[in-house]
Picture 1 (tube, each protein chain N blue to C red):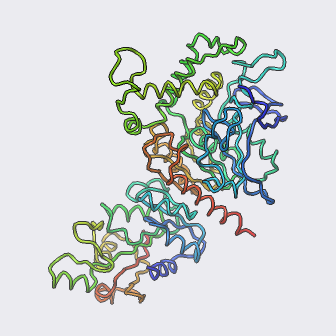
Picture 2 (picture 1 turned 90 degrees about the horizontal axis):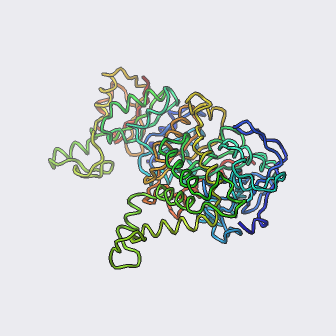
Picture 3 (picture 1 turned 180 degrees about the vertical axis):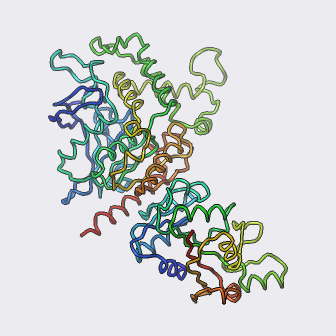
Length: 377
Length: 198
């Protein structure tokens, strides 16, 4: 990946004790910001990205030259209105867009860390990003928000720092990765590790990436982000630039061609080892573990206002799992709102232009900002 | 009906915790936020209405009283409000029971099927009454269990539910309902408002 020199980052000097027991310090954390921090420094929103996202939530990603992953949601006049709010987004540790990860060069060996990179968790990711508050001199965030793995980070953030965000928006996520979630992630990891180019994670030295394995991982994952109905409506049994079946194994169907394309563009922007590490972190995520299965205890100390959102056709992080978060918050009298947005687009819905979803967030944030920040004067 | 909000508001002590079950677009929540308590939230079954509430920054959960009150521990709220929706539930009895489990007190308002206009409608036309407060035909009404103020009073008595206060609303007019005037109030009230305790 070229152009990484254009990436903004802080070096976290403080030592961070990881869940695996190792300690890291002096590590880079890449970030991007949108909008302006106001004088009172009370309009900041920390946005967390999902598995294959990065710090470029909006605008053009200078490395890939593509639109930011949450361009529909973050920008002037949008759901996270950058005319009002200062949006910060960081690349998670373990990622491959400038933050400390398996493709970071080890200063001693001058080689990429590869699988010498420690296994990290959602908790580690959140603790690393917490350093951004100090860097921007923000006492308290207005909000933390994110979908999918980003939503898991939202939950972890509020649990770790109950007094550091006024509002929390966990979207299309879970408090505990299910067997099905783990199964799909394992499928992706096996695809990568069984690519002969992977070479126990040392492929970067050989300049020969396990692209095929990573592409298959992406193809499989991509199916889980869509709904059956959405797939059927978009592709059905339509053929790809041919009038009849070819009786071979080329991409006869449009859906095959589409998935192959998704796989091929993904390998240009994502690192196979990062995929292994980040999916592992997701699988290890179980916010209830520390509290003997009682999720309510994870949020006991918080005064944060929650707004949980799920989507009707999301079967990867279904409404029932999002509702469990709501139930655990209600059990302790925490302030929580919840809505399930109607959409045929599956788990991917949180990334798409769905007016009910985006408008509700926009109005909710604007109204809540007025209520919490401006009436205080 | 602003008059109804006013009565409900008067029944609620300041700074108490309240839940509005079936909060619709959140009008009552907004009213109570303004005049009574900052600690009020809602439960609403319609996605569109929940989105409208959230757009105003209100704290509302999508869900229905028959299934989603379960998640609240006993006595979570000082007041649980059920405004003109009791008749729309499949099982009003269970809903009342849940309201009184989750709330220390419940405020229930019911459109009165005993109102004289309703009675005359049925008597003279011989068809199911359609009035201002009951605007639907029998085949498309969401109301499954219509009752009168007398019916509701009997229901509470039978189940040993304490009625702390009962008020009648007739147009803009608010008055008290007591045992001595119950028959009359059942004839002239459009709405009955009850403050209940287990």
